[in-house]
Length: 107
Image (cartoon, rainbow, N blue to C red; front, side, top):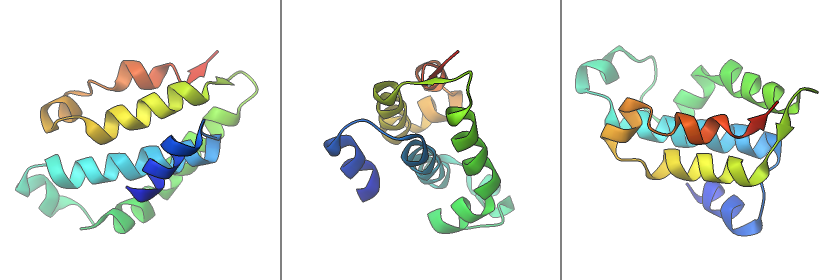
């Protein structure tokens, strides 16, 4: 969470920072919001394990935001990460942040 807050305080995200912070926030929310049965089925039990398990997805997010057809919006990236990190469990599980995050990469 500290890395996320530092990125928010310093200014606009880079594509790599965005990918890392988005997945960190996502992993934090999963571990807080998933049911016990869902958590038991996961091959990890902490944020670091979640990031390691989802390393390919983190890289995919970075690649998507650096593609030629993506006009990366650093402010939208900050808004997306903030919305994921602060979403209630109901909002997170319902994907309420998806519309905000879709604005990160304008094509």
